[in-house]
Image 1 (cartoon, rainbow, N blue to C red):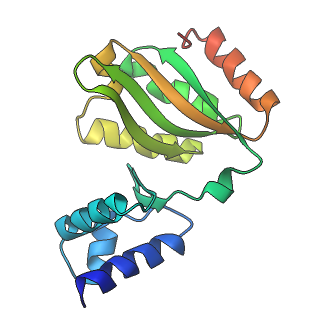
Image 2 (cartoon, helix red, strand yellow):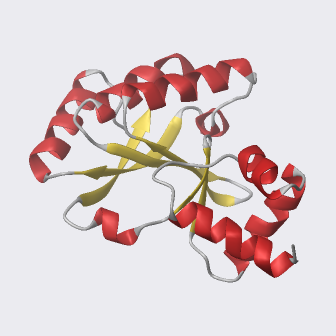
Amino acid sequence: MSVLSRRENILSMLKNSKQAISGTSLANELNVSRQVIVGDIAILKAAGEDIISTSKGYILNDKKESEGYIVKTIACKHSKEYIEDELNVIVDEGATVVNVMVEHCLYGQITGDLYLSSRRDVKEFIEKLKRDIVNPLSNLTDGIHLHTIKCKDEASFNEIIKSLEAKGYLL
């Protein structure tokens, strides 16, 4: 299979999937190494493909999927032990935590795509955080971070804000 065919196959697989596909799964399906997939994804992104890297794998950004929703950014501050609770507050209102962002003094804005929409997603994210013994981005900024969230309506967004405020998580 040629390099171009492989990249077309990657795009096709991502377009036809309702969920994230891991680099390992793509590699196994296309009989190449995971590192080859990482390189292909980087080249596809550079060519303008809107591929999002999440903790679960790669997804194509479907802008149509966001139609009819509101997308807003919130500022939060808390320590690492409250991450799971904060994320659950958001997804419990039917919202999606699209990403986390921090403002780094050297690198500027650093963004990590999350796309968490359920307690199961949050649980898997927290398990990976613990299993891989890594620090969240908010550790770089003394717990201060932003989230882009996607909600079905303003009422849901207001409930999220009210709950996060009550827990002291909003900045």
